[in-house]
Image 1 (cartoon, helix red, strand yellow):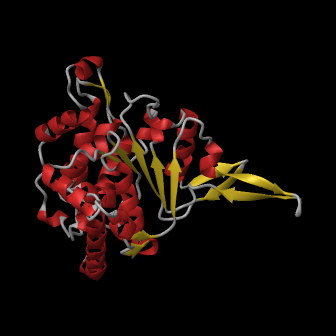
Image 2 (image 1 turned 90 degrees about the vertical axis):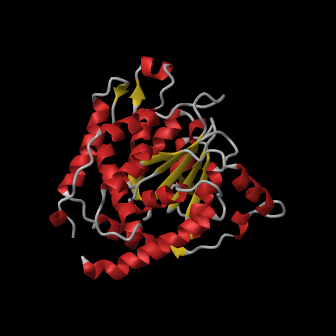
Image 3 (image 1 turned 135 degrees about the vertical axis):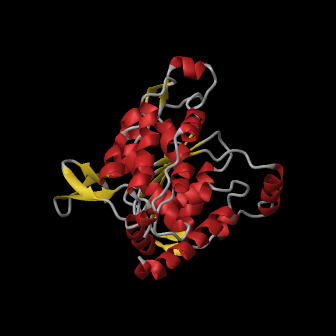
Amino acid sequence: MQHGAPQLAELVEATGRVRAAIESVVTGRPGLADITIAVLLAEGHLLVEDVPGVGKTTLAKALARSIDCEVGRIQFTPDLLPSDLTGVNIFRSGTHEFEFRAGPVFSNIVIGDEINRASPKTQSALLECMEEGQTTVDGTTHALPRPFLVVATQNPVEMEGTYPLPEAQRDRFMARITVGYPDLAAELLMLERQEATTPLSHLQPVTDGASMLRYAALVRGVYASSSVKRYVLSLVTATRGHQGLKLGASPRASLQLLKAAKAMAAMSGRHHVLPDDVQRLARPVIAHRLIQTTESRLSGVTPEQLVDEIVQRTPVPALDPADRR
């Protein structure tokens, strides 16, 4: 696959610029930018979950501003209607015809702020958009632009005034990440940087949507050996028989874990996937799809810890040199 080396080098350079742009705004959280970019390249969707004030929306905005493309933002509230997302048909008396006015989902990057503040009916309006890349309004199907990425932020479900995301919708997010609190040095740097201004307001695009679409096509061509695919399946199927889980990961999880691993491999400058790529993404791709048993939940074990346990006990395959190309 040496013929693709120049394109891969271009991908590595471009994603490096996007990473630097994001990390100039979201300080002290290494690795978040890589997962965010990998989800975009793998043509998935990202769920950012944490308590208020740690930078969930800032992370989403930093990604959007670093890429020169259409950006839509939705502030989810309890009274938000599905048509507020997808758009409506408006009757024009002058022409006696209906005109479709597109909603914010008709953007390349859609930032859904506090998605679990909206009712389940409105949350479900995103399902067709996320899975099919299209939406249907009054019986007419409208294709969404490409690339298309939903970055949804969510406060923990125990916070007042929230609705838990349905299992079907959680499963459509390729990955879930937690921003977390920065360490002392990073938070001090944040205070110094944002004392008089916000870095986000000065962030300039470092690539564009058309380029990201080309890179996504390149990612689809990254090679995954049969042993790596079996390793992915071993991790996912282990969740289905785990005694601490009532519901394991779906076959969609296997597919999305492999796609995300391909993106991570390409960002590392490789044309093939390694087990390390799979391990790095197992927690963000698998954990949010799991439903624990009551006993497991009451014992204080988290889904992330269960995924880590499965990764540790699952044998890592030895790659056949002939499988690498």
